[in-house]
Image 1 (cartoon, helix red, strand yellow):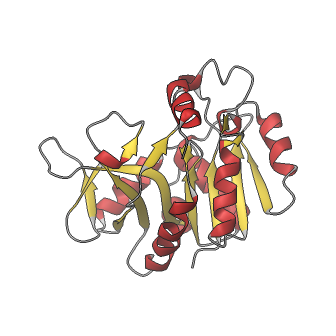
Image 2 (cartoon, rainbow, N blue to C red):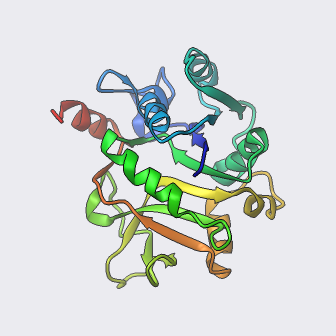
Length: 233
């Protein structure tokens, strides 16, 4: 079982303006508490023992909030002076965690308690001998707040490749993955997109997908914040 997690929380949140004029996106409130706190609570449920969060935009506000949470060992990966992009940010966070494998979560997905068992199952199915990357994927009809054509398609029961126009049953990256540190360390740059690591894994047949069954909500715009906050369940 995976016992550590990285949360990507350094983005500028431009699509969330004006809500992010004064707050970093992970601190925008959903149903009464910051969206990142919903994720941290979920990580408690699935047995995560240590969390590393990268920060950049309004980093002091987010760091102060995270340090006020006393029930979890939370490390801060400070990117205040330079954004490292998703891949570089994860690579730096891995160095702080000192672990070989870790969950990696985007901070703009609204997770519910119903997802806890799915994520535990994902952790159990991670095979470090075969997988360099294990992506949590939602069918395109089950990720609300996404407006693209799709990200990936399955080539068999678990191996995946990039979506191409005309492919059937497109799946969308749902903001959670399990990664091996050594894959990122094989990339010499310090600033790079996680897509570069995914493409390396595709070429080596080590990029796998895990199907998430429950509806996922991507909180990327003020409209989605309003939509989720107005929902009763």
